Image 1 (cartoon, rainbow, N blue to C red):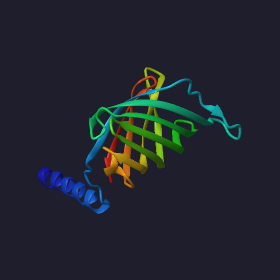
Image 2 (image 1 turned 90 degrees about the horizontal axis):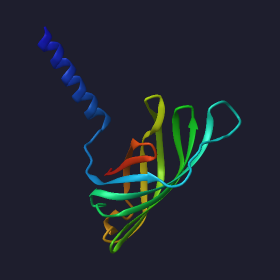
Image 3 (image 1 turned 90 degrees about the vertical axis):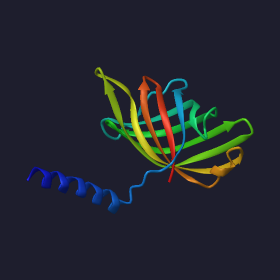
Image 4 (image 1 turned 30 degrees about the vertical axis):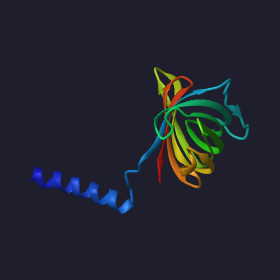
Length: 163
């Protein structure tokens, strides 16, 4: 009976994964990032815990096609309590002999708290590479999935995957 139950769970999980179209995408690259300057959520004033935050950040590529690259980015994030929605963002990726510019398509996240203090946010979404040249030319016009995870206060990792 136990084997049948375990089998049912395993086959159900496989069925769910295949029916949702989940695939294992190739990693394009991974960055280690730091928030640059102050980044304080500003109250919107229409309801409690509704804020807007503008974030500037800088990153260094540590893996994949983006290893050795630098990234300059900015994002505008709407917060409703612990949940975030990315309203706008752009990124500039630079490598020796290459340049790419990305634009946010969608993104959302959730605040991460450690020892009772906000550490950062787990976030994910999609971005489109609107321009790419040189060593990054293969990224031109591609839509990439991204995920961000906090490492410490004002520090995070960001990974890009092909869609």
